[in-house]
Image (tube, rainbow, N blue to C red; front, side):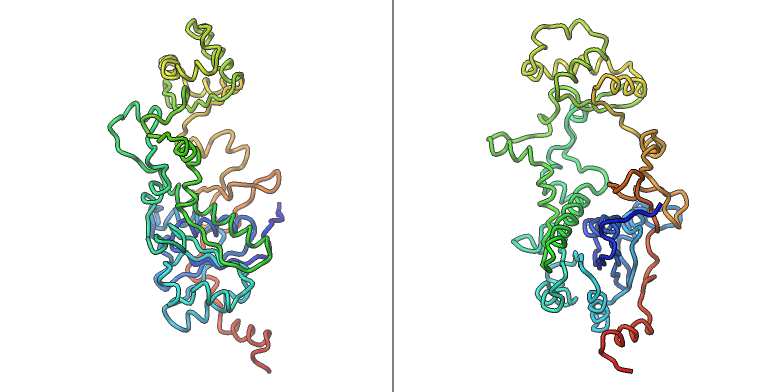
Length: 388
């Protein structure tokens, strides 16, 4: 089934060496935009980023670049900058994560872009934004997850109970950079929707500060959250006989469902626990009871019974369990990557119809969309610069 996608007909030129900018482009591509990567002669460094597949190619790149095109331009040379300009002639958006200090030499200075291409949305994606005292700073994922505040709060809950001496940790993968990519894509879409060419300055740090909004709110109230104190009053990560589950308790009906799930234990009949405020105050005591009970429970049957009773609980799955999970299979969450047998990824974290989006192409070969000399002549003829 061919689906109409909201960005069909929109062309995006992506000049990105980092995950955030590449993820922004990938999201726009999944929405139907024609996204073309501009790579240097040494190729996009994401092509070499771990984890690597058996053939030596990057699984991360396959995920971030699926469905995109590729053109090689040497922006250190005048010819390459001219090629880039030709690409921008027919584009509605430029994604760029090159360092601020390097943009002028690369022909990507925002003022120059605005002067030559006034209709284009110029989406800058940098660790700390393109303006301000940190605009020239580089950063890796570990810097960004801590710069946004979330790293300071990890591990917490059961993890910090089990390993109280562990230092702050980063979240697995590229959480912070991908949060930045999401924020950048949404900001770029808002600018595109306005119908006006403009510079959009996306900061990965800003996007991650928003993730910790509750911690910031409490900071305003004079309370500094810490990983040793940040946890659910009761619930959170629970160890079971053959794995772990996450239990989230927010509403009275969920508490009543949990009591029923546990077989109405005597301790839960304490009149004081009928008051949500007292339950919160006695959260540590309740969690000890829950964890003691759950250690003998098999994950699959426990989660099934919990969901029947309206108790928000889900298992922590291993990768193979996620790929083969009943829910994920029913929703068509994952699809095979063309050209990479055995590799399955999520085509998009959204859908526009009852059926999931398809994955029409894998990552591009280097320079697979390179304009030929004949194309260049044709372009000049059609725009009036050369007469027959």
